[in-house]
Length: 379
Ligand code: SAH
Image (cartoon, rainbow, N blue to C red):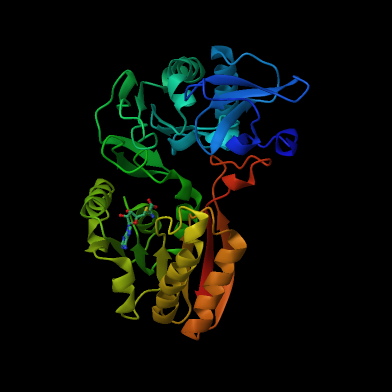
């Protein structure tokens, strides 16, 4: 009850006093207090997070509602200058951060890819589609719905175009770098948009440098570094598919002569690393998806960072990240410090990094903060 007055957008199942057995997953429900006053409405699901609140007012959740919320989210991105001739890869809607819990919409050069994290949002797809068409007009040619991974408990959910269509891979731009994006076969919606500003920052340090980009996926950090004059970049990933994506993007931008790929497990590779790199990027997948894995995750981050700190050239930089929501920025910083102590080298923190403005954090939903990083210099 207190949390709803503070506009936290979730209601946990234990906080509900009514019998919910008649409700179906995805039902739109009104939230009432003990005096039957309306506190808001949201999508119900038989799960720990029982209601994702869409509105804290007594309002109808219809197409106009979605149109207003989506238009507002798009306006924020325009204000952040993310829709430009140089950049057409961005997150249009970031769930709770845009007051649309359970809804992710990514945008790749006129194509929107929708990922639903709740059945209620999945049932609202028609309204979301119409809202996108009205809001984006000619800037939208297709919408792909991709929720079979995120709603995997429901076997009836299939992925596909719900408006127009588009061949993949599809060409899109991130700050002038070309990417071939494949939302059909790729991880998540096809690209890790959340690292855009951190990739751009690497570009600022990259000129003339020899760089190792571990956990490269489709090569984002490598491409930004090469675009800004890196002398040589090695991209490492344990997935063959990721290496193929990276090489495709490297070729697309004509950077092949300054690049090589390494198919390997990062942890093993880092153990044996030669001291030859000026910059190392560490961007692993979430080591902890749940609180009970936090300790193990911290050990993993410490080991990985200790290897990099030990092996980097004197004066070198490490761009190190964690996207585990349960490892907060204080814990992550302490873990990197512990790794420096273990490696026995002097380390300075030059930059403290986070998720970008198109992945906003709802101030009443601090759980929305998940990406954190540091740029450290090793003497
Ligand atoms: N830095 C990337 C996103 C990283 S996603 C970008 O900017 O787009 C995480 C990547 O880590 C995935 O491509 C996955 O294949 C890879 N990965 C997972 N475990 C790994 C391991 N043990 N060694 C190397 N790569 C790994």
